Image (cartoon, rainbow, N blue to C red; front, side, top):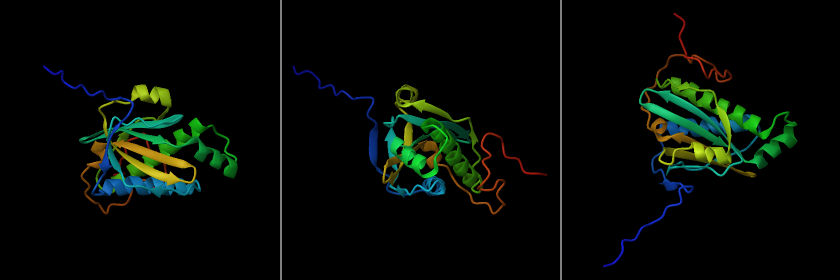
Length: 197
């Protein structure tokens, strides 16, 4: 009698699927929001095709994480910016912040841009206050079964990644020509958006 073969899986390694074959409107919103934000900080990025991943844990010194929820949507956005990109910003602008503080602010800004753009498509998200976690804490924090979409952005100093719960990438969008409730420069992130009567 032969013994069954037991395959061992290293849980620190995500199960990555091939790049998604069809780009969704939400993919475009997430990618363009990230590109525009990084350009505003004078960091050139090249978006790569998104990929579906289960149990994604990025290799990072620190990562920004913000939870969100809405109708049939829930999960988190995780942003990782390499130290080398931060060092470049430090040289160019003389930033008076730490790497963790800068990642916190970028996480806040990219989530706000995505949230603002989704309002035009009748998708209203509620978000929580971002947190910045060390790589070790993030590895303990992330669910190994989380189904996410990872967006990678190449830079001359490494790769920036944004990972979001797959439920957001599957959101159904319905365009509205109502004026935006907040301007792109406003970072209205933690309050419900209410139209003036």
